[in-house]
Length: 291
Image 1: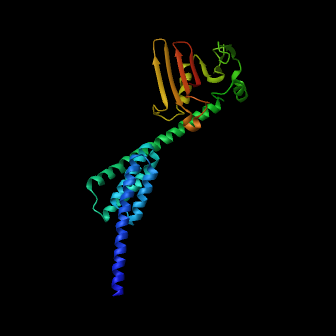
Image 2: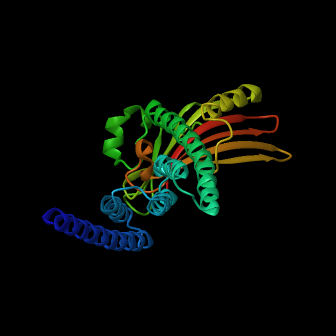
Image 3: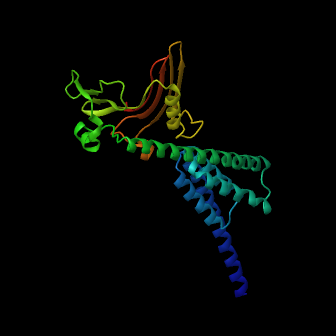
């Protein structure tokens, strides 16, 4: 008799605990949905962890919500793509023991395909960005340019930058302009200071009558960058008229571009310029400037 009563009490206790856990799981699931709608990824995932804990199993419903949470996070940051793909595959794997809704299976399958593609595009952009950054850094270092530095700082960093340049003072005492009066020499051509800091630095690579040599030099610099550059990073110019031919490529960035930072503040750019005046002079120069 005692054994019988004990069994009943144990059954009632376990049943009550199961009901209680089901209720707690339901509350945690609702909290996860609220956190997802509020854009709080960490809280949403934490609540889902409680759902699994209370139910002591992984359910299709909670796993599908987990996929949605990671997918929402990935819309803001593609680096979460691997997490979405992993959780999506875990959801599909539940089909071995559960009947999953066909529409949700299709949604998750399409999501995996999309993210695999987006991830590849993102990796290509990262690679391109690194290559661009390496070339830009190399150019700034090779020509010893520090945009945003004071004149004293720039003279210490690149004392040869002022060789052959004549100084002109503007109305504002802190705005100065240095230029090379000899337009037939290569080397530093001009330096502009705005509010006491380097705004742009112009370096002439070639000047002469050999247009083929000038254009070849232009393409040597242009080809340092990846082919088919995205408009996110580059702007191209090509003008041909009766008496002039001009081709340019401009690479731009901002302080958020990490190692590309060569300016105290504002957007910086590197311009590679080729020009040919009909039957006379061809010129190639680099212009480093900030806005």
